[in-house]
Image 1 (tube, rainbow, N blue to C red):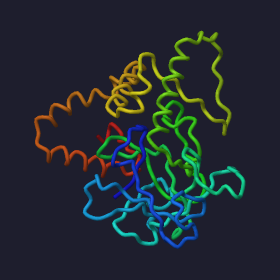
Image 2 (image 1 turned 45 degrees about the vertical axis):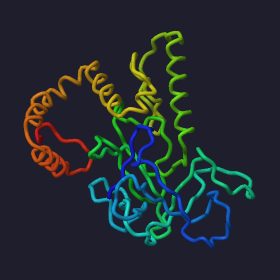
Image 3 (image 1 turned 60 degrees about the horizontal axis):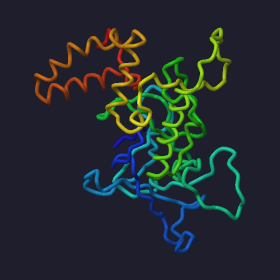
Image 4 (image 1 turned 30 degrees about the vertical axis):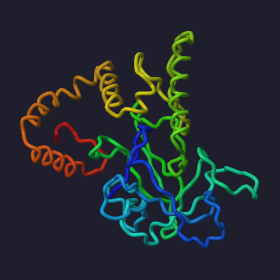
Length: 285
């Protein structure tokens, strides 16, 4: 089963993993805290209704698309060596040597023991059963991804090979921070207009502010609200009606058809997306 990442923070069976030791005799005794350098497995939730336990797995196979990015990452029904991951410090993170415990919300890297590569994710779009999500793969070091101006949903995000262990309290804090930021933006005075300037090469882009009237908490919690708000923003920019007018003709046909017609269309779109970007040219469609 392939992996993907998304922008919605709500906990569900798809984005919650069970951490377990590879070896009970790894030198950490009965301490259940996760430590740097410790070998772990990340297992899927039983709520996924899989017949047998599945684990986060680094495969030696290529990622399978034309992006040229790394090796395939998936969930696999065997606790083979590909399911062994080492927790490493991210970037220049430094702390006292005696303090070797991994804390919630602390940036880490997950290194595959078998393939000597790191778990990664970036804004390469994938089309899944749950909509447009983002590519997960294995590679060595941070992998850059060039995205056109205005088209990057991850503006301001960190390196592609850094992750965090989080819980529901952390996600709730992120939602509260987004709400407070939106409230401050409403109270802030508008700045005087400035002449536009092109960003320098290599400089980070600032995240685009949410359109007026959009609930920041719902954008992080509700995938349907997120999708509807994104379409509304496209329409406000003059691109929504033009880009999605074709769907006004296709949706009624799909609703009148049976389930097999939906699957046939989905398979056609997947096979036509030769670059693996989750995007089709209008001429192809």
